[in-house]
Length: 593
Image (cartoon, rainbow, N blue to C red):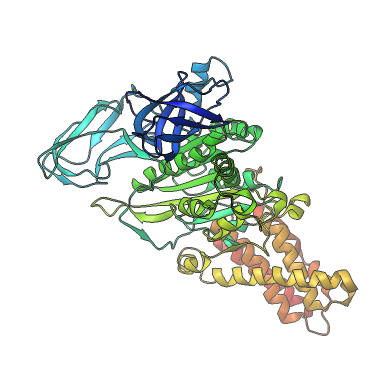
């Protein structure tokens, strides 16, 4: 996590409480400074200071550590290493590459005290300057480019706080620690720039300004993109009980969304779930480019059996890396699975610090920490003189005990996110996936996208969406009546609502994440399918009250059965959907001819 520093013998342990260690003699230490505990050099971070006594959060197992052991200071805060080589990496919660840790351990069990560089310091990268000697640059300006993977061009930027006139700049092959440029500052001092830079993970990276989000993140999920969209640069949450499909939903978004960079954080999840992710992602093919998906992905794995303190660090490490690529001008999507485990880690550490507990034992600062995390999302104008715009979309899973959304983590999350995908255990039990409850979920971004939908998809996209959602709400009320008095008591109009709503649920919202054709539906096709279903309702309303109309004849027309097969029409164009709707109208109108 840190650059090369000389460890300074500073203090002595006086008490060990699980992952929390208290040491005295730490009067010169600073809050959030990285330390190494005992002669085993266990990685830790100072989270509280009282005089010369420091409370240290240790990111490794503390068994065998006791009073009298030495604590070493590094003089550096917990920071993420940022340079070419991040993509395709799989890290633990404190940015140690898992492959390097395994190699150092010699087996599948991670040994304590292992140090591993987040970035390969020896690998050479081909650097191509984009500025020349004599150019004046400011913080955030791009000095040059490195082809990090076949999909992503890494932009080497002037670090925040630096700037001046380019005195020297080189092209060629360099490792990340070698000097590529020097800048003459305004005070005539010289700044040496390498491709490797560090940023403290708990501080948001600076930006020039935030921009109002007006474009949706396309995920290929019909219930998400059409009914409950999230903005590029937005913040969303997926709460749901065990087995409702949170992890699969997040993985589907990670695979298919149109973000250019994916950062996936497994925070405190079960080992078997994280193993599936680690096994599956390296073999996935990016649907947009045909290249391996890992070429634009970074994975951070901190499973439930790993030290609890590292869960907190994993979330901050992931979002710092995501902000770094956002500053290059990329659209970045971050998945955090799950923020409930992050909150539980905060609760455990807070309890060991003997802080005054808040609701359900969570620390009083739970809401503020949650807000700080989600507020780092956004579409921003990055630092620099070139009007570079990037976005960071944050999607966090929440695992409320028993599916109770009134618990503190869910409520703290709902207050700061604008998209809410409520997963329903009853829908999951019925094998309806994704089990996003269309009555409880919402998106406050939808009104931002009406202009986008009109220009990019169809003039009446918003109206079709509203009609479909209204039919689902009416269906819910009518089903209560049916349970009491039976279907026979309903009018033809009410039966039409139930039938069309059933089509929306079964033929549009139901989506198989494991079917290569059904897992991803472009927004244009989503509109074509839903427009066709809504057309039945619109046309049938014109004839349903005629004396000679019989409801059974409606469900017998050929196009009615064809609705269920629309999502399989992968090659259909806008004109094909229009022809189908014209045929549908003609067949329904002919019922009373």
